[in-house]
Amino acid sequence: MRHIGFFFIISILTSWCAQAQIIKPLNFGNFETWITREVKESKIIGGKMKKIYVIGPQEYITSDLLAPFSYRKKTIWSSSNVYAKVAGIIKASNSVEPEERGDGYCARLDTRIEHVKVLGIINVSVLVSGSFFTGETIEPIKSTDDPYCNMSFGTPFNQKPKALLLDYKCNISSNNYVMKYPGVGSKKIEGIQDKAEIWIYLQKRWEDADGNIHALRVGTMRTQFDQNVPEWKNQQRFEIHYGDISQTSYYKEYMHLNGPYRARNSKGAIVPIIEEGWGTEKDTPTHMILMVTSGNQGAFIGSIGNTLWVDNLQFEY
Image 1: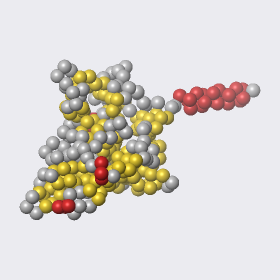
Image 2: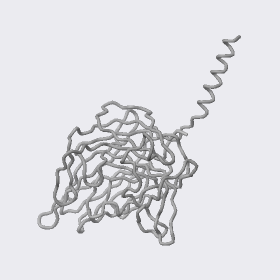
Image 3: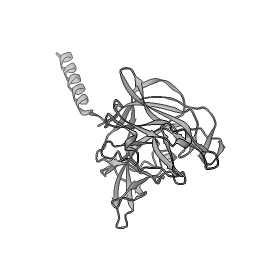
Image 4: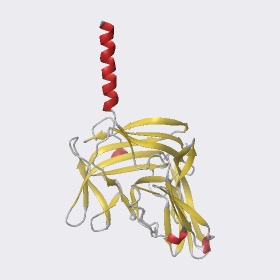
């Protein structure tokens, strides 16, 4: 009878733990559907028809509906895939795309260089790290002078998940240097390895009378990948830490407050997000920034050939 009672208690506890853990997929986070968009590049650079992919509902948009185009009402996601119009020349860039995985699809993110070369008119080479994030990119991209001026980071979000779950694999360059291609010219920077990265910032935001956006950092998760992972790692768990993490063993310098991130204010302007400090564990977020990228060095800097694959983005509650 004692044994029966023991196993009964274990059964109850196991059932309770299973009920306590709630798993919710992120919108379109299984990457089974994509918006596919045709962009016809300018004749002066070849006039090819290029495809731009956006994580969202299944839809095909032809070149007759050329940019500027907004996906805001269709999906929470944007990416490094853009429609650019520089000096009147139309160019498409695509570094995030669906790839077959078993009977379905995953997302593939590549670091690559986009070239726009027209003799005597324009000669631009830009390094692009394949990235997608919650937010919006305002089209068209007109220059490389300010890479964040067209990007609004974050989506409304008031939940407090325990962790992010996902499947991933990656190819990461072992080079101890990175290349910078900011548009004109190039530069080799020694002593740095480019890493793939996934991060979540949960923010409690507010806007002042002048349209400035302020925030407290309520939750943080940031992880980097510096080695090849050739086979899929499924249902990997990345814990989200709440409150002030600056004095914890988890904290790394790259998790600091106030990155170069911006957001659209109530007046329609793209302004910096000013993180005033760390929130507390009792604070409820208003917005979530979730970024997945094949490189962690910022705009125009990285290692060509870095590739990150991800699938089945889910939150654990």
